[in-house]
Picture (cartoon, rainbow, N blue to C red):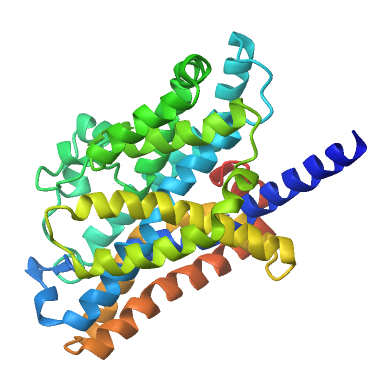
Length: 375
């Protein structure tokens, strides 16, 4: 009994440390995903075409379109796990208590950061007109009341040329979909209790055959990975312990899948490779992190972990303007310069974000906690 308790405690501690450790690296991956030069438009003119830079395109695709694509699904997985973590049953009272907590951790930051982007865009459209702005989007000064409301949920209603249904602070589609999942959490709990692992399998198959289904607030990727994480929590299973035996085979398979995805970009069955890469990649990331944490080689930096939500919340528009500024300044026309910018732009944004977060936490700690969801 004593040994079982000690093992369980050590396993739970490793799981907790793995989650904490991954928060910052996953956010770095998200910033790199958004460091996309394929559609940089200034004054209505597109800046570069990827077909002219094959080496850069391969490296960009490997990292931003393959490796880092695991970040958001893993965040949904962790969110589902933590939402139901150590929840004894799921009564109406428990549900209301969890909703109340998520108002502070999700809804308040969601509203604040979307409004912050609107203010940022207003200043940019006023002060930088014709230079660093694209010239394609509706001016904030021309927004109607419905435009303001849609900007908080789906800006394609404001700017019809946008192909994706995103809020005005585009990375916050994750928070938007997560809030919908929180509202539907009794359904998630009921389905898992009734169908057990079959619920995860069914949703996994739906995602596998339609991974790019994004309806505002509802997406196959959010439902599948949130439910997968919830399954472990609701059934009192440790996902690190469950995945750890797969470390070696998952790592080997993931390397092979990465290579195959790059070699067969644009093929008819690339989506199948993409989905397989996400699943194997998630297992690889979790098990590799847990392995080195357990050995003592990797440790969580508390400041970096705490800053992760702020970096996520603030980074999108500053990143766009840093990219456009450096493109205007350097006018890259070589593979080497594009690769340099691919590393430099997210690095500048992340370092700047860490500095801003540090100053805010030092001088306005309560405000910083509010806009970071109490994190």
